[in-house]
Image (cartoon, rainbow, N blue to C red; front, top):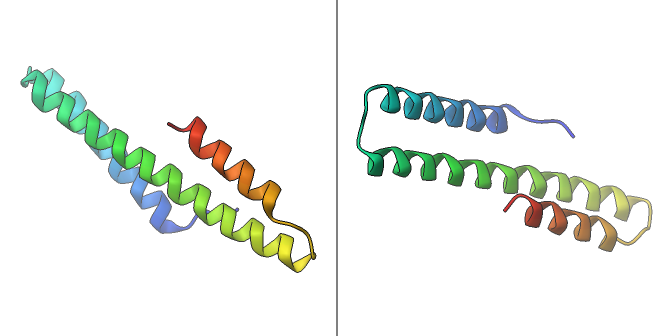
Amino acid sequence: MKYDDKMKNRLKRIEGQIRGVLKMMDEDKDCKDVVTQLSAAKTALDRTSALIVSKNLEQCIREEQANGESAETVINEAVSLLVKSR
């Protein structure tokens, strides 16, 4: 699978969020604020994982259809990946 710049940029933003959380901790910011930022980073990671799985699923289904095969196995693997990421 080819990971495009949009996917990589999402991860760079998450990386920035995590650096921000570390800075907040160094500055002894309020627990609620730190947890809020951690939650935002987690949500961003979940969404990025889902995007990667969905793009991969789309690509795999097209390949299976081009080969005249059923996409059911590929779909089941994608669902399994999403469940694991939760």
